[in-house]
Amino acid sequence: MRECILGIDAGGTAIKATLFSLLGQVIANESVQLLPNMMASGRVERNLADIDNAMINLINSILQKSQTDPNNIAVIAATGHGNGLYCLDRHGSGLIGIQSTDSHAADVAQAMANSTRGKAISAISLQEPWPAQTPTILAALKKLHPELYRQIGTIFLCKDYINYFLTTEISSETTDMSGAGMLHLPNLVYNEDLLKLYGINDLADSLPSLASSEQVIGVVSENSARLTGLVAGTPVIAGLFDVVASAIGSNLFHVGDVNVIAGTWSINQVLSAEISRENRPFITCGYPGGLFLNLEASATSASNLEWLIQNILVGSNDRSSGRTEILQELDSILDSHKINLSSPFFLPFLHGGDSDPRALATFHNLTAMHNRNHMISAVCEGINFSHRRHLDTLAAKGFSIGPIVVTGGAARSQSWMRMLAAAIGKPVATLEKMETGTLGAAITGAVGVGLFNNYKTAATSMASARSEIQSDPDQISMAMHRYSMSNQLIDALTPIWRSIHKVNQ
Image (cartoon, rainbow, N blue to C red; front, side, top):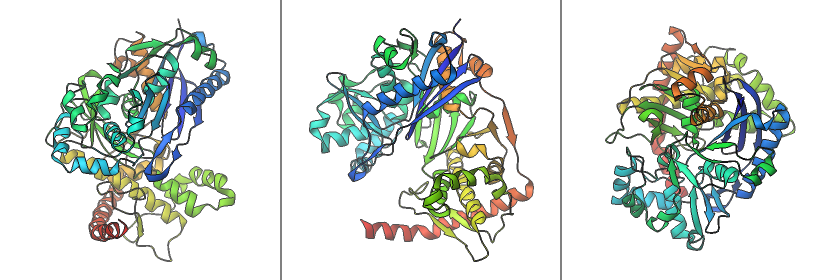
């Protein structure tokens, strides 16, 4: 019997791989940095040949590091960032890779969203057009770069291209394509009217066939085996949207289960049995077991702390060591003082707000009595309040908010998680295994090759136990006061942000 599963997670700045035992134990981790090309006019792209090379290095490295016999790998399962666009040309060669942080299509998105087409689009896909959304990018390419648009032969999302590299098979699946606004919901199928509304119906033949996430869509090709050290013929499943993988890796399968991902983005997602058409969230996508995953999200999470450390607190000469030192001391920093009404506030809007893209980041209430530790606490608290606003939005839209599991980098800090529990006003849980993306992919792969009968059984065997974190009543009371004051601050600054935006246009 083959003894392990290879999970792959392709994010915005790196591709990670984890080898798991059949019981979910981590055998080895490896990652390869893959930074995007930041181009003019908001373009954020990847050379697809760079993904090929990263995959070759990544897989060779993890096999060597773990001393794993590749014959023992039962299945390979990939997850990746959603939206963006990864295309082959009409000859099957890599054409273009556009990431989910791209804003090149902003004007096209705004024009469609503000037109009657926007309402018709959202009625089908439950999403309004937005800049990095896959069909919006395609519409922008057709308008702005028609020569490139005409070369498109296959429309992929990130993990689909990885599967193509491994197998040469052209396929996608429903969690990713629904999250990208490419499918009819709740039916999870392509829709001709939707393509016509975006003006991209001429690419209908470029859409890959749709599989379920756990379906085996191919095997490792002879060429990929030669390049990576894998064994030709190893099964590869269709894979899934990374936020879905995180929820599966957190063992969430009940209506009302919540996953807060405190990473680069503030991702806040809850499971439901039905779609919400009248009060739709930012993104709704398919989920195993006939459920739906509903997201509210913004770039207002841990990237703000990273900015503070790298650009304000650490000098250029010792940036790496200084950053490591602060992160290692984060719990003691957050425990070094009690937050009160006189403590600084921070609005984590370096990349736009959680409800208004024109919002700007700011510290407020700073005095000469405050130091580095107060600023770090303020940033962590501001990030927590942004997560709370997203969860409040989901609740206001009628979603049941049940047990909350927190994943992402911030979940490594127990003190930060106690602050988050206070901000939300209820306990949160963290997991022993932090690799929920690759783990969710591995669980899906285990189901796909019949190692387990269903997702729940697989997750029960492979996912790690939860550790509940509570906050004390005094901390909750103070957090509620400060959350109200933070929201008042946002209301007061909104007219100023709009004025600044108008001047800068």
